[in-house]
Image 1 (cartoon, rainbow, N blue to C red):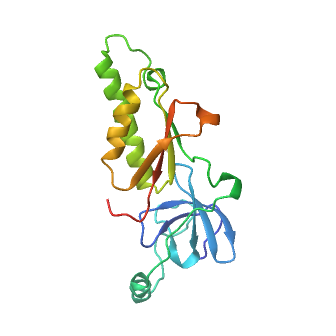
Image 2: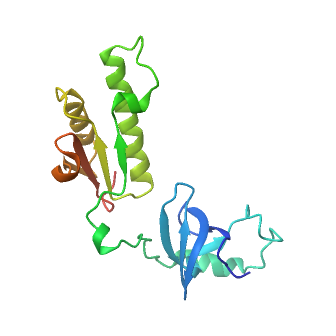
Image 3: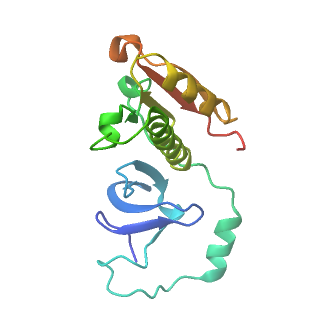
Length: 185
């Protein structure tokens, strides 16, 4: 069955699925549930068995051909990035306490800091899983406690580098994290 725009597809080798948004020759662009776009070759994708637009969930595919295809080394899917956006962070996380909870009533400074660090850890893990190259954590200036704790957290990861985010955009209150994709965790 031929893949069309709007079909739900999944990759053969990776755990990535989404909706087909663009087809250009054999290159197919899909958008995952989180809104991120990925490009794959047509032979790297298959129609999802959960696709409502497919009349039948049974495929007439040659199982041996799929096995042979899996043995062939695939090029990694890299999202296309426009030159203007190449150095722009793709993902921002605002760690101001007002953004994370409706009320701080009854919360100690320790509780608030832990909530902020849990959010940062969760978003960093998400970015690593989704292969997002850059993420900016907006922590504010304050006394620098959160920034210091974030640096300790980021230092525990072998595959991340962190530095002050762009001053023109964020001032002194943000840290940018670059996720190195080819380093084993």
